[in-house]
Length: 193
Image (cartoon, rainbow, N blue to C red; front, side, top):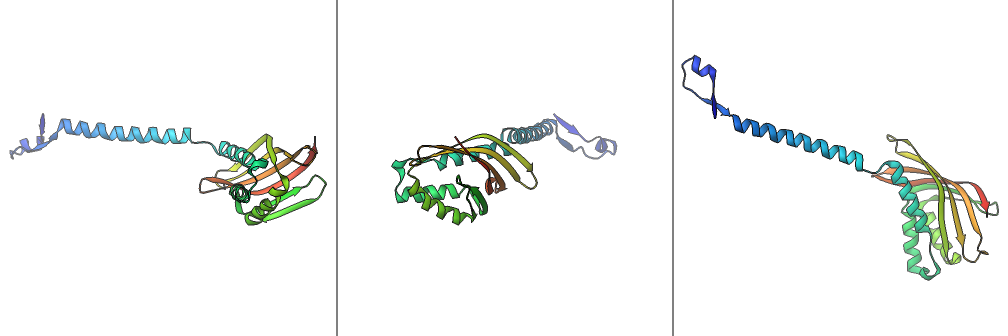
């Protein structure tokens, strides 16, 4: 069906078709489908993308799992790969201040220093089992992309009378390129069980 211009009939000019009504409806339908598709995609991305708190919790759980190792994986290559993997959780400039069980404190200020410390410590430990409890995450704001996480870390070292040690730890994290990195670690207290 072709619609003709009314104006052309009134002036007595030749009749020109304005367009096909079916093609106009098809264009309208396609535009609505495009708008609907974009809306569905936007809502699903917002709804199904993991929240910052969930990303941080997953990241810290992965860190504690990666910190654990057994004596059978203690070669130099395994140690180097382990140190690199752990260091990747931290930003280039990181402030780590931890109190040892005997009351002494030690601190590190860069990811490279952390990696060197891990390389030196792993052969002396033999094996290490790390876990965490009571993880609480608070995101300061989505604009600054900063978060604070508090948890109780527990670890057991082989060769140290099989004691289970626990420490309350505060992590400060920053989001960079859609990934959360630890920028500060500080122990609150030491508990021996």
